[in-house]
Image 1 (cartoon, rainbow, N blue to C red):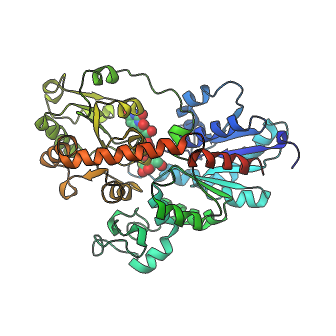
Image 2 (image 1 turned 90 degrees about the vertical axis):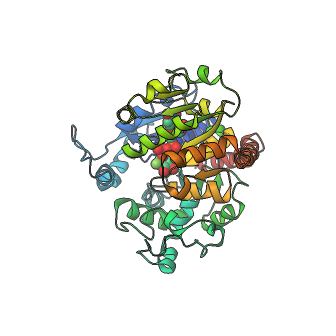
Image 3 (image 1 turned 90 degrees about the horizontal axis):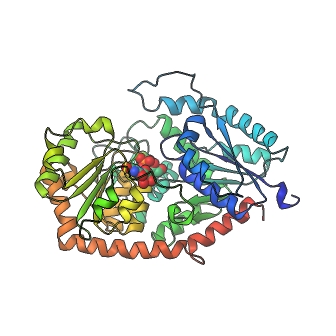
Length: 456
Ligand code: U2F
C-alpha cells in the first residue's frame, strides 16, 4: 500500500432496525481519526434517510461519502404485515450483487481509489468473502448483546448438547455446558439456535455469520473490558482480534438528540432523585394491547411518576381515562430523548425490552432495569441483567400484570433490593466511563481499529 491517501474503507450496513446507526457513528469516529483515508458508507436509501441527522452533523473536515444500496424491494411494494422477515429475505437475495455494484460505485466516486478495507455489520457475513477475494482486511461490528454473540458462535455445539427442539422440555435448564453462561437458561437463547424455526432467514444468516467471523481481521463489540471478563476472554480466543469499543455512545460522536418536543427534561427537573420510571420498548417492539392495559393499571396503582415512550398507534390501547387520571403525574410521549432522560437524576428505573443500545445507555446512566424481553438477544440480555450483573429484575413469573408491574416498580424504586441494584449500576457506570476515556480500554481498542483500517 502506498501513502495513507491511497486507503479507502468501504462500510456496509445492515439496513434494518437501528443497526445502521452504530456503524455510522463508528464510521465518523474512524474518519475523524484517519482524515486522509477515504470512507464510503453503503446502506439502503430508506435506512440512510433515518440517519440523515447523523449524516448532516458529521464534523466539518471529516469526509464520508454516503451511497444508497438497493434493498431488493420494488418501488411501492407493500410488505406483508404477517411476515416480518420478508424485507430481510428480499434484501439478502440480491445483496451480494448489489453490494459489489455499490463498492464499484464507491471506487468510481473516490476517483479510482481501490478499496483497501471492508468494515461491515456482522450480519453482512458475506463481506468476509468479498474482502478475501479483494485480499483486504474485514472488520465486523456486532451491535447486539455479547452473550447472544457467544450463543450464535456456539450454535452447533448447543444443538449437539441440547438438541434442536429444546422447548418446552429443557426450557428452564441452565446453559451450564458453557460454564460462563451457566446463570442463563435454555429458554433465554435467541430463537433459531435450539428452538423455533432453525431454518428461518435470521437463523441461517446468524449461522453463516458464526462460520465467517473467525476469519475476520477484527470483530468490534459494543461493550467494555471488565464488564464480563470470562466472556471477553472467550471471545478473544474465538476471533483473531476482539475489540470491545463500548459503550459506543460514549466513545463516538452521537447525532444531536431529537428535540424534547414534550418537555420531558423540564418535567423531570421538578422531581426528586430516583423517583421516576422511564418506559420504552425500543424502535420495533410494542406490548400486546392487553399488556399495555396491565402496565397502565400497574402504573396508576403504584402512584409512581412515569415517562412512557409509546408509538402513536399503541397509545389508542391505553385504558379509557388513563391519560386524564395520570395527568401531571405521568407523560405518554411518541418518542423521548432517551439518553437525556436516562441521564437525568430523577429517573430511577427503566422498563425496557432489553435492546442492547438501551442497556448500554442505562448502564452508563447508572439506572437499574425492569425487563420485558421479546425476541432475539433480548431474553439473554434480560437474564444477564438480573442474574449476572444484578442490575435488573423481570416481572414476577415472567408475566406482565397490574400486580407484577406494581411489585417490580416498588422493588426497584422503593426497596433495599433496588438501592443495591442502583449501587451496582453506579459501579458499572464508572467502569464504562473509565473505559472510554483517553487511555481506557475501549479508547485504546478504537485506536487499534484505526490501525487495522489503515493497514498497519
Ligand atoms: C434492536 O433493538 P432496538 O433498536 O429496538 O432497541 P435498542 O437497541 O434499545 O435501541 C433503541 C434506540 O432508540 C433510542 C434509544 C436507543 O438508542 O436511545 N430511543 C430513543 O431515543 N427514544 C425513544 O423514545 C425510544 C428509543 C433489536 F431489537 C435488539 O434485540 C438488539 O439488541 C438491538 C441492537 O442490535 O437492535
